[in-house]
Length: 492
Ligand SMILES: Nc1ncnc2c1ncn2[C@@H]1O[C@H](COP(=O)(O)OP(=O)(O)OP(=O)(O)O)[C@@H](O)[C@H]1O
Ligand SMILES: [Mg+2]
Image (cartoon, rainbow, N blue to C red; front, side, top):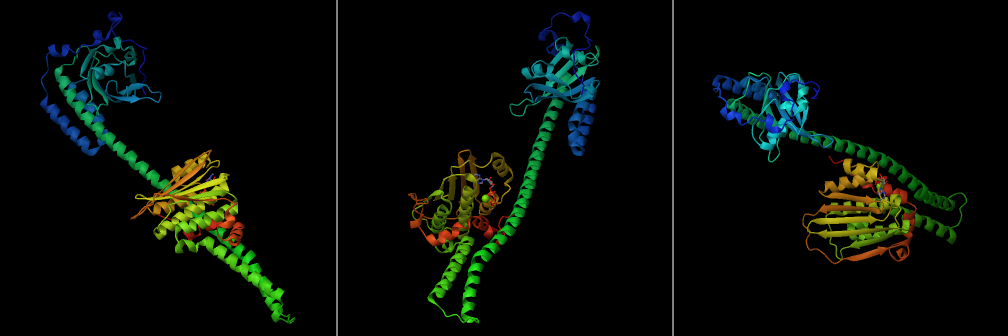
């Protein structure tokens, strides 16, 4: 890029006195100078050239216009100066297109507030300057003297000035007149329109590229999520297998041993102790089987709906973890669509699992609201929050490394809803909103159920909860079972 500096001086020596703007501004002379006649042939040829450029290579339209400026005005140099703001915040003109003698200076810059172009924009009208480098001494850095500069403002976009188009003469004998002003004014109009077109194309292209980047990012996030889900599925299967083997399997083995003692060579008589042992083993098998099957899919959810399933689950959660939970439900929550109830339940499971595994919080609050907009489930804890980088990654790409939050988001999006995750060093609030087709009569009064370890004994089935207690890790994985079996989390 050519530099504009004050290294050389081509200005006549008689002009060394302190110079003011009025000394170089000769716009008023345009009225008195003889006007050359319009060259209609050249103009119509130029128009043809323009329309060809517009059709063949719109990106070169501006350069074509600048070259036409040289031809039609018989100028030595023609240029386009566009306003821009530097990263440091300075407003400058950049010589984006040049034709003629100074074409090597393309890319050069001049200050917005102390330059011939700045004067033109301040005055909102064409300006003629004679030996402008007397005042704007940095112009001495160009190779040849600038005898005259005719500068025309571009038509602004709204209130935003774009810049200027200008022609220069480097010879004493070439002076500009009002015919040059007319010609350059119409070139300025063409240029402004071309610039607007190019800018809207650029905006369009940038928007398209951003949309494409977002799609690519989302696709790769989904791919990662489904890989994590598959790994999670494998791990879950291993854990279920181990659970079945270590619990139900052991009890059944014991039971079989007892029964074979009755039947085998020993012909042991059936004593009350042996019978009690057998019955105990069967009871334990039933409890274990029920525990596992409840965790995979609580029957309460289908039979009695989300409210009952949530109460059951929250009570069990408090018993298993010692984390106090407050469950705030509308008093008469009517049944919600099946898919919505299941999604709400899975969100509750996963978010409570996360509270237990990650938050360090001693309490959690769950709040459900149904109104004309839909249903909102909010789970708040008071722990140390999601690490900032994970939260940012989740917001930007929808992934965290785990499948919990990502899976929740996919499930909710599947129902046309949204998941909001707010988190800082004082806790995390997860808000899931799901639209409902028709919400019917709504309840505004609220009833709260608070659970803590002390009162759990009175709520629900203590024995069953004790069984759940040993399966906290299994529970975390089983939360996702339904998703995996039914292909959720792979939404396209
Ligand atoms: N309530 C919370 N408090 C603090 N950190 C949390 C909370 N919930 C999630 N996180 C953080 O966000 C991360 C992502 O959670 P996510 O549920 O997506 O995955 P995960 O729990 O690590 O694994 P997965 O759910 O797949 O078993 C967690 O690893 C944890 O660091
Ligand atoms: Mg999780």
